[in-house]
Image 1 (tube, rainbow, N blue to C red):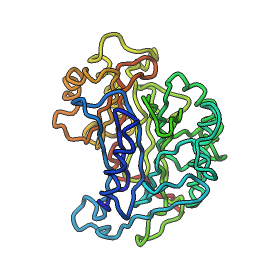
Image 2: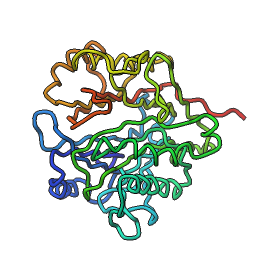
Image 3: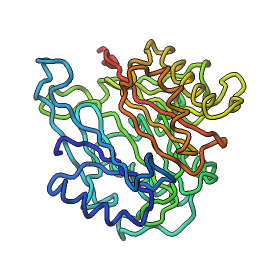
Image 4: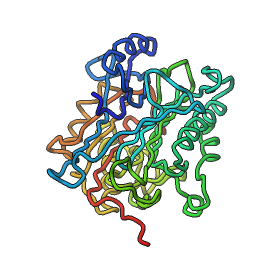
Length: 351
């Protein structure tokens, strides 16, 4: 369990968080990974809780490779962001930092700030920035953002604040860089917050004792294709080191930018077609997908979704998360995002 880098807890009822935490502590008595906790509308099999983990793989996946046994995790906390006994603010491993989801908490008081969703969004992002500054990582090294919203109708207000944080540097502004992004409707958030934001961050120099590269020795490759829906607030795919992070795909026809006609089967197929188009644009195939996140407006649609899903993943290889949500952007019935293996990595900057 000490190899766990991130834990994500989905509960049916946000009031159950204290009970969940009571059990959680017994599994992480010393080391605590990063943590995201959110209530959703429904879970498969009518479960009350669902938990997923991201785990470090120190020896790598290539037997006897040079990296075997050379990688360690580094945890970090700063007083300039909210501190929790249940989680580390950031856990870095290899070329990635995973941050605990940030609530709009004032780190000086430990309480939720007073204000509307705009103020709360700003505080979440300030907390993320403070954590990154404490480990000397710039804000534009974020490769994936997940936004959990109590009211999905608040998305425009959130975006108004979001664009004041991204892009954050002259280089990023020159390329209009935004990280990959997923927006999720939460039925409840800890402390009754209106918004919660988590980030995955590139870590160019890796974690010691492996050989130290320059801070930006590994390139972040951002890419968009006209064969999938585009957004001014996110990049379709952001590749860094050995992974590609794909923005959540809605069932939008890229030619019209409108939801495709039909029911959940047709919408699922369009989401997966969009993902496939993005992968093909960067020379990848669906077999390179290592993780799938499914968000359903009606959890009862899962059987219909799976009928389409198996056409794209006949071997059932990727790890998978399925949750029911109260709403999806553009009133979609399904939303899908994926993480993709990038076996060749992204190239280092040549001197």
